[in-house]
Amino acid sequence: MLNGVSEQTAGARSRGFENSSAQFMPIDASRIGFPRPAALRPALTLGRQNDVEIAPVARPHHAVVKTDCAHCSTRDLCMPAELRAKNPEKLNDAFGHSRKVGRGEAIYRVGDAFNNLYVTRAGSSKTVAMHRDGREQITGFQITGEFLGMEGVGSGKHMIDAIALEDSVVCAIPFKALEALGEQDRDFQHHLHKIMSREIVRESALLMLMGSMSAEERVAAFLMNLSKRYQDRGYSPAQFHLRMTREEIGCHLGLKLETVSRMFSRLQQRGLIDTHGKQIRILDIEGLANV
Image 1 (tube, rainbow, N blue to C red):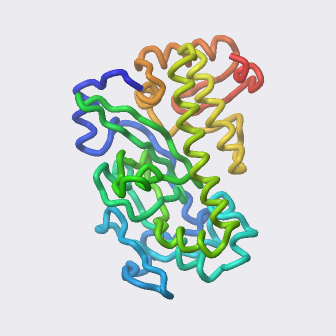
Image 2 (cartoon, rainbow, N blue to C red):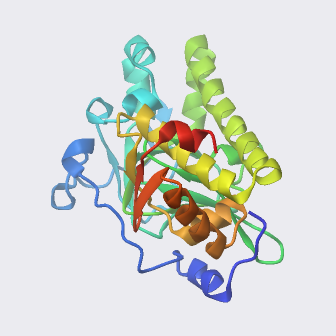
C-alpha cells in the first residue's frame, strides 16, 4: 500500500491505465441485459423524472441510458427482492441509469462533486488514492454488484479515483434519491446503512492485512477474499480470472511486484493454487484459508 510507484507506472496513470498489455475478459452483453453497442438507445436526457432528480454523472460525455433492473444479474446484490417489491416505481426512478466505461477510463476522479453512488453492473474497477509525494495506493478492487463512491458522502467531493480495469457498465444512483427513499422506508434506510457498513469493514480488513500479516498471508487472504466474493455472485469460488495485474495487487497489499510473483509461485509449489497467467485455480481452499 505504501510502497512507491515506478516512473513508468506514474506516467501510465496519467493515461488512465497501468499496463496496456494486460488481457481482460469481454463483457457478455446478453448475460447482463445491457444492449449491444449497435442497439444502444439515445442518451437519457438528464433532469427530473417522476419527481426524482437524476444527478449528472461524473463523466457526462459518456452516454447514460435507462435500463431495466429486472434483467440485471446483480440486482439482488444491489437491492434485495423484498425491498424492490415494496415500492417498485420509486426504486425504478432512482436505479438503472447505466453508462459504459472503457478499460482505463475513470468512473470518477478525486475532486469531482459527489452526486451519485455507483454500482458495477458488469466488469470491474479499482479505487486509487494519491499520496502527497505522488505515490499511489490502490485501496480496493470492485467486481459486479459492489458499490463505489461512499468516500464522497461526508465531504461532498470524491476523495479517490475510480478506474475501470476492463470494459465495464456502471449504474449511477443519485444519493439524494437514496436519502429520500430512506426517510420514507426504514427497511431501505437499514439496507443503505448495511452497504456503508460493508465499506467500513472492508477498510478495516485492509488495515489488518497491512499491519499483521506476512507477504504470503496477504496474497493468500487476497485470493480467499476474491473467492468468497465470486461465490456470493454465483460463480465458481475455485476458478476465476484476475482482472488486475501483479503490480496492481502489490500496490494494494503493500508488496513489491517481485514479492507478489514469488508468493504466487510459493503457493503453487505448496499445491494450494494453480496459475496460468491471470487464470487462478484454487486446489485446496481450506489449506489456502489456513496459510
